[in-house]
Length: 190
Image 1 (cartoon, one colour):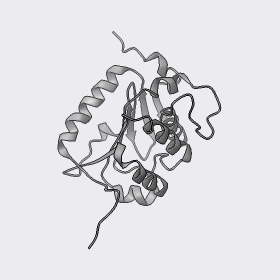
Image 2: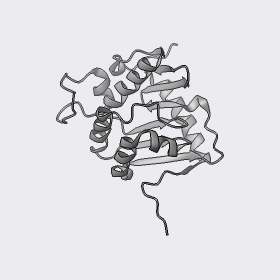
Image 3: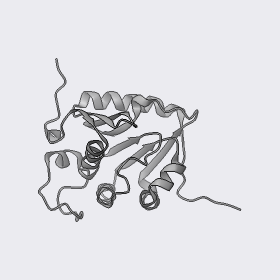
Image 4: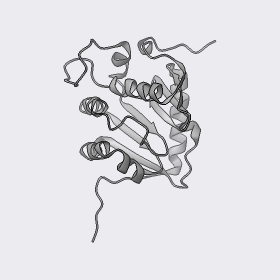
């Protein structure tokens, strides 16, 4: 039996997406859809809530997984505003797994600054051995999974069914057994 697509995520086109502009737009679309659909002032969000936004507004956990995030639209003010509005609802967790957070901090200074204000709702992990399996790279916002296939060629595969999201979540949970917390919000020195 073929996997069923989540009806509320219908505005997101499942399948392969290629090219830097298309992949960045897809990441931005999903991240901004996290903002609550009504009653939250998000700059640029004047249209009625999309089915994707209605579906993702109730999500309690978001996973961002990549070696470093400089290619992600995380410095975009609209994305940061949407993530902040989503986290402000309480009971939400932004989970970030990566390897090179120094590069991320340098490449995304607005995101690095924003993250400090939200550290109570953000967990950051790094693999103990430094190896991050490419199969885990992407964005998981169940029922949406954006799997990053390769960074240089800009290819993402989008899934909108709960089966793929659950399988990815299980793989991430297993992988976290080999990770440690990292990227403190402040560095203490003597």
